[in-house]
Image (cartoon, rainbow, N blue to C red):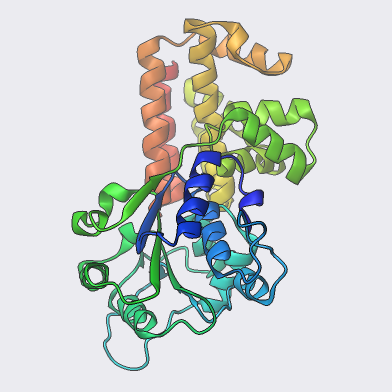
Length: 373
């Protein structure tokens, strides 16, 4: 991963390169960004730059040297990973090692915007709680005790430190208080407010802003060969998140728009048979497709709010979509729109935490009925 491949964040890139060139990289960095931001990519690009054997004009990793090739595959001897795992062990026995390392290295090579649900699917453990526990903290201690083999630094990447239990958090804290020589801790967090305050105080926090619409549009056109009109439409709905853009892009395969529209109709009419059938259908979708349906429903309400209470010109939508929004907006007050958004947001929250999808969907339908009738 090279800085040149990271979308946007020009100021952060300059700061990171400048710190690396001067030899003043903090011993602990915490990249903070919402899911689908450039936080993970920036952290990866910094690591590649620090370990590269042939830095390009002092501004980027070369992507061609042996160190870069090993780094990109996740097998560089000075690169160590810590990440949440399902059913985390709490043992102090045996040799500490990270479970699911092959799966993680595959994610490292193929994903610049990882998220926990995707990781759970990759390790086929969607029903278990994920945690960084005592076993993983022993891996941190082991990595920190090693010397750098090939580069100036050894790098310890810690993804989602907010998922550390107290034992793991306290062990990391001790290392941050007395950092080993040539060791850099690179943390990537989505919810830093859930990280131990004492850990946060010993890191330099880099807040990564969401992407703007133009950056997402350019990404969709370049990486997914979308037309300009298609890319503009999806970028405008993505709220600064590449993950949300990809969910919109992939939602067409499950017909999430029509699913959400029919869901609203059945909920409004309290069509019990239709809602029961739709609940069964929803439960059979995978988590990504369920998320797409919720996002489509969420977007319908937001677009209706914009149409009714702002101006139609703000909606960059095809005419057929605008007609749907026109019809929906006539029945919604501002208070009902806000209530609908809260209902859908709560539904997404419960689904993220592995609630029974059929019951959650059906209960949500009854709540929607109260607002849509």
